[in-house]
Structures are given as structure tokens and as C-alpha cells.
View (cartoon, rainbow, N blue to C red):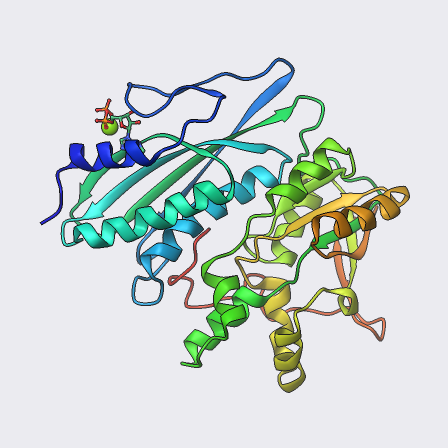
Amino acid sequence: MRAGEFELINKIRRRASVGPEIRLGIGDDCSSIVVPPNYELLTSTDLLLEGVHFCLDWTDLYSLGIKSVAVNISDLAAMGAKPVSLHLAVGLPASFSDEQVEQFLNGVFAGLERYEVTLAGGDTSRSVGPLVISVTVQGFCHKDQVITRGGAGVGDDLWVSGTLGDSGLALHFLQSNRPLSAFLAARHYRPEARAVLGQRLAIENLATAMLDLSDGLSGDLRHLLNASAVGARVELERLPLSNEFKDELQMDQSLLDLALCGGEDYELLFTAKPKMRDSLEQLSVAINLPLCRIGEVTSTPELSLVMANGLIYQPRSSAFDHFGSTKDRSRE
Ligand code: ADP
Ligand code: MG
């Protein structure tokens, strides 16, 4: 038997820290956040449904808790905002034990600590069906520093953080019943939101447009290009790939599609003026996160994926179909 909902909310409330920006947190009908002068409040919501976005046979509840926070923080990072508050709405299956709820919450609180964000409210209910998680995050960004998808200009460089395709490769392994290395498991089950990078790019005015990669480089890049009414040329040999990914790619060239169309990388893709190259390389060193220049923005409104031999590459699918698109995707 699980503790009553009120008891659970009280438990959550006792664990929640309260940051200075939160005038009212858990306990009243609304939370209230004080926005500093000249700052904007940015808000994003993600829904995570068991059976649609994740599968409890494959993920543990602690990792799911952390990931529920991280994928939302990633959206704030993608606009350059500093995470401030998080609201958590959950529909808990009646079959869940107190221990299972605890494991999930332990993951959520680990994520909150990791990104220094306050749990300021939410909603708690029983679910007669699957586990339902809805997370809303809010963050601050100076009104002149918000980085949208729409600011890319012709001639800008195209940059991406970290490495691409690791999470997609992990899913590919799971499908084939192959064990995951610690590296691939971490990339898949506990992705890191690039919160510091996003904020530094905004504060230092280094990027012209940005988004986070949740559905694969080629699809997500198209969103940015459409919003900016430009095209891009990506040089495939420049794509940042982990050693583990490269090893697999050597044995099976078709895995390249995972780096282009595999989901859940949660890296940041951004455009920047060529004069910012030195500053971006310095930033990469300062925050200890690889930043890779993979191409440039063009005036012709299409996306060209160019191979080392100069020919244009066509991925087999524009959105890599991991699982008939149902299992273990945290984001749509
Ligand atoms: P109401 O009936 O007004 O929605 P609730 O009893 O649902 O109030 O919630 C009481 C307080 O607890 C509110 O401040 C709400 O934001 C907070 N809360 C409820 N569920 C959660 C949760 N899962 N995580 C964080 N805060 C929660
Ligand atoms: Mg409520």
C-alpha cells in the first residue's frame, strides 16, 4: 500500500529546497516567482508517458526521475536561460509501491540538485493506467539575450556540443539484446542537459540561433533553418562521434544514420558568426565540453549533408525509427 497523496506531497515538500527567486513554493494554490528587472521568464513543458516515451522494463525509476528533469532543463538551455523552478505533475499507477515512488523521487531530487533548480509545485494523482509524468520548467534570461531558433544568418558557422548518436546507438543495442557499456547507458538513461553552455552562449552573446537535439540532428536542424529562413551545409566527416560510436561505425556504415537521425542526444546545436570561433574554442576549454564546427549556414533554403568525397548523403529515414516509434523515447 502506498502512502496517501497528502502524505506524499508533504514528503516532497520537506525535501524541496527554496531558492531566493521563489516567493511562494509548494503549499499554496500557486507558486510565485520574482523575476528580476530586465529579465524574462521562459517556460517549457514536457510530457513523459509510460509505453510511449519510456518503458519500465528497460529503465530504472531513479534514472527516469533524473531524465525527466534533464530533458526539460535542456529546453531552457537551448534558449540560454538559467533554470529557476520546476513543477512536477505525476499520475502514479495504483500498483506502484512506496519504494518505487521513492526511487523515482530520489532521481527527480538528484536532477534538481544537479541543475540547482527549485521544485516549486506540481500535482499528484493516482493513475488507473500507466505512469504519467509532466514536468514544467521555468528559467530567467536577460531580455536582450534570449537565443531563439530564428536568428541564424547566411555565412554563420554551425556548431554542436558533445558527441552525436550515442543514445540512438544504445537503443540499437537494446533492440538487439546487446549489453550496454557504462558510457552508452549513461548517455541513454541519464543524459546531461547542457545548461552551463546555453547560459554562457547567451551571456557572452556568442550564438545567433540555437535549439537542443531531441529528435536527431537532421530533423532538428531543419526546424532551426525553417525558423531562420536559411539553409545549411553540413560536412559529415566533421560530425563529433564518441570512440565507441566510431568503433561500431567501422563495422556498420549504416549506423551513421543514428548520428543524423537518432533521438535523445540532448546536445545543443547553434549558429555563430565566424568571428566568434576563438571565443567559442576558449569557452569549450573553460567549461570542459567539446564544441565542434560541423558546417555553415547557406542562402539556398535546403539542408545538404556532404560526404568526404563531396557527394550528398541521403539518410535512410528522416526520423530514425527506433522501435516503430513507441518505446523508450523521452521526447517527441
Ligand atoms: P490543489 O488541490 O490546489 O491542486 P494540491 O493538494 O494538489 O493542491 O497541492 C498542494 C500543494 O502541493 C501545491 O502547492 C502543489 O503545487 C504542491 N504539489 C502537489 N503535488 C506535487 C508534486 N508532485 N510535486 C511538487 N509539488 C506538488
Ligand atoms: Mg492539485
